[in-house]
Amino acid sequence: MGATTLVEEFGSYDYFSSAHVFGTCRMGRDPRDSVVDERLRMHGLDNLYVCDASVFPSSGGGEAPSLTIQALALRGADRME
Image (cartoon, rainbow, N blue to C red; front, side, top):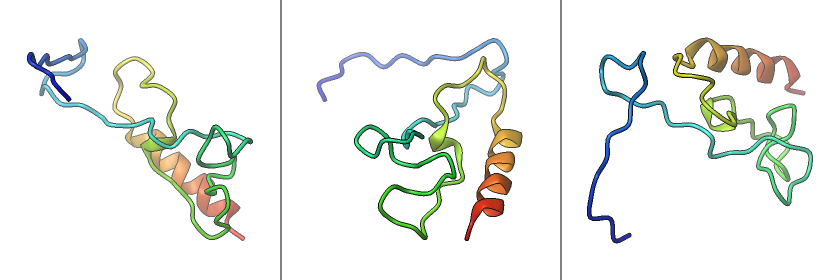
């Protein structure tokens, strides 16, 4: 994309210089501006659920997202029909 300088960004809790990638599948009610609904089901596909960090809107301050991902997976499993 034309980048000439690479910059590494990290928070105060990031001792290992790593990143958590998330936020690529927006959750919402309107399929025109979101990917999954509040049940974590993909709009237009009744049997596809997204239960990972991609539905996060933001990082929340540098904490590892593992427990939230696990909670989302349980929520998605409970709502499967």
